[in-house]
Amino acid sequence: MGVGMSSDGQDLGGRTLPLLAVRMLLQYGPTGASRPPVTAALIAANALVYLRPGAVDAHLPRLRHVMFNPHLIIKFSDLRRFFLSAFYHLSEGHFFMTMASLLHTGVKLETSMGSPEFASMVVSLLGLSQGFTLLLSKGLLLLGNDMAYYQYSAGFSGVLLGMNVVLNAREGNVVWQGVSVPSKYAALLELLVIHAFNPEAHLVCNVGGILAGLAYLLLRHGPERLAHMFSGIADVASQPVRFAKRLLRSAAHGGGSTVRRHVAPVPKEVGRGMWWRCITCSYDNSRHADVCEMCSTPHPDHAFSRRRHVQDGGNSELSVEEIRRRRLERFGG
Image (cartoon, rainbow, N blue to C red):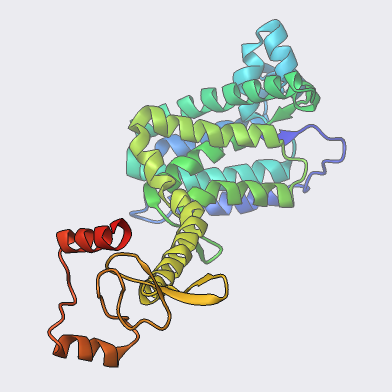
């Protein structure tokens, strides 16, 4: 599923089927090449439904009877539309692109997972992708958008996008057109490419396929695989915050050193005179005083006065009791 019904769809006149046959021969023909049976069976089933050769045609339902339509599926509980619509294609171009992608992705996954697990995954993704498409369409209908709910579609694209999500989670970075793309962005990139080259593609169906792949990873492997896929998203989102923190930290270091350099003494303007504050007892002294009038601590900026005070035997550090006594003498008597 993944392509909506359109009256403008044009067939490619049989030019793509030989290309698909060549690709199949290149993959399965050489001696020693991997020949995943489930992938081959899926391609054969899709080709059989599309080509409808001989007597097979009489036993297969027509496209209009199996196209995916959320309204009809929910209203009549039509399971035939729910499952069979994935194996029908609207045009030869649609069929070729889907089978070429299935050949590429299926061979890799089935070779690494094994045929039994791969077959189980395909069945799971089929049900999950169709189910998510139903839920999304119904949700859009409740929000006032009924286009997806009544639209007809068909194709294997939803399952393929789910398979690509699983494959990307297993491979890490993905090489796309010679460019290495992180796996967490690969499915979104593929979705954009699909709709850039085929605007008629059913967006809701394809999004349902991506959600199916994520749900399969969560159900099959737990949150660890999803965490591996999306580990870089938090880092990317936190970069502006980290940059702001570095700026604030730099400003704090610079401002802190400036404050320390200007702690003592702080000039204080009272009326028309200038005062300086003692760093020992916080007393405000006249600017003409070389030492504190309260505790005799030298003015920090008057180096000569400091040396004279030390030579006279003065103590630059007074005890708390001495400072208290001098304050009482000054203000009390």
